[in-house]
Length: 476
View (cartoon, helix red, strand yellow):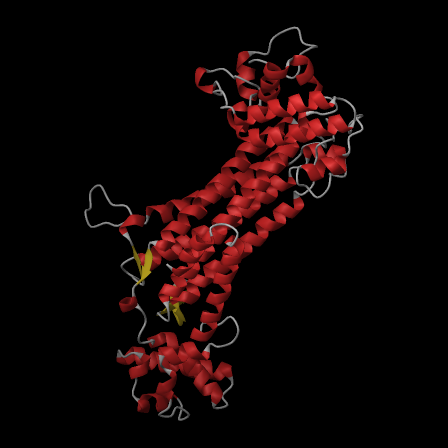
C-alpha cells in the first residue's frame, strides 16, 4: 500500500493481511466526486483563513479538478494487495503528484479523515437519494399509466387472500402509487436530517484553523454546519435513516411484485405480462415467468438485512469516530443501489403490463354480501342484524348452488320479508362500485379524481427533467 496518511510514529510496516482487511479503497472509491467537492471547499476555507495563498489555492483547485476527471486506478484487490488505504489517501497522493507533496500536505491542515468522510458520505447520500426519488416518481407515473389503461375494469378485492368486495383494478394500482408517494416523503425526511455539514470538526474536538464553517456549509450546499464536533464525526443516523427509507420502499416493492405476480397468473388473469418483461423455462416451453418481479420480492430481504446489520454495527459504539463506521459504506451503497435498480426496473415492467378486460368481474356473487346488508340497513335494520340476515341469504344461495344475484326472491323473503324486488338492483357490480363514493373509495368518479392527483404529483416531481418522457410514462 502506498501513500498512507499516517505512520510517522511506526517502525514496522503494517502486516499485509491486516492491510488487506482494513482497506476501503476497493469500495469507497465511488466517493471520489464527493471527496473532490469537499477538498475544493476546504481549499477555499484555508485560503480565507490565510493558510494558503491565492496562487496555491488556484493550483490545488485545478489539480483537484484534474483528479476528478482522471480514471481511478485499480483497487488492487484482485492481486491480493491494496493500492491505497482509502479514497482520501488516493486523492492526496494524486494531488502530491500534480502539485508536490509540500503543497498537497497543506490541504490536510486542521482537517481529519473523520470529518472528511462524514461530509463525503452525506454528499453522496444526498445525491443518490435524489436519484432514488426521481426513480420513485417514474414508478408513480407508470402506475398512473397502468391505472388509466385499466379504466373501469372491475376485479375482486381481497382480504386474507380471500375474495371480499368488488373494486376497480385502477383502485388497486393507485393504492401502490400512494405507498410510493409516502416513500418519497420518507426519503425527503432523510435529506432534511442529513442537511448539516461536518467539515471543520477535525478528528473529534474541532479545528484550530479559523475557518468559516457557515460559509463552508453553504459552499457544499448544506443549510448549516453541524453543532457538535464530537457528534459530527460519528453521527451515522442519516445512514440508518436512508437504509430505513430504502427498506420500507423495498417492502412496498415486494408487495407490488406479489400483486402483479398474482394478477398476471392464469388463475387470476386480470393483467397480461408482455414478453419483454418475462422469462421462460429451460424445460417447460409454455412457461412465462415474472422473474424481475420475483427478484424484486427477493431483494427486499437483502436491503432490510443491510438495515438490521448496520444498526447492530452502531450498537455499543462510544462517542466519536471508531473504525467500525467503515461498515457504513457498503451497507449504504448496496441499500441505495438495490432500491434504485428495483424502482427503475418496476417502472419498465409496469409499461409492459396490460389489463385484460375479458377476465374482469361481471357478476359479483358473494362479493356483494355487504351490499345486501346495506340494503337492509336502508330499511331500518341495525347493521349487526342485517349482517346476520345477509349471511343467511348467502348460505341459502350456496346451498342452492346459485350466485347470490340469481337466488329467487321467495328464498330471499324466507330470510326476511324486508327483501323486495328491488334487492336485485343492489346486487349489481357497477352499482356496488358507484355506491363507494366516499372520499378515498373505489367508485369510478373517486378513482378518476385519484388518478388525476397521482399523475399530477408525478409530473410535478419530474417536470424539470424530460417532461415529454414523463407525460409518455403516465399515458402508456
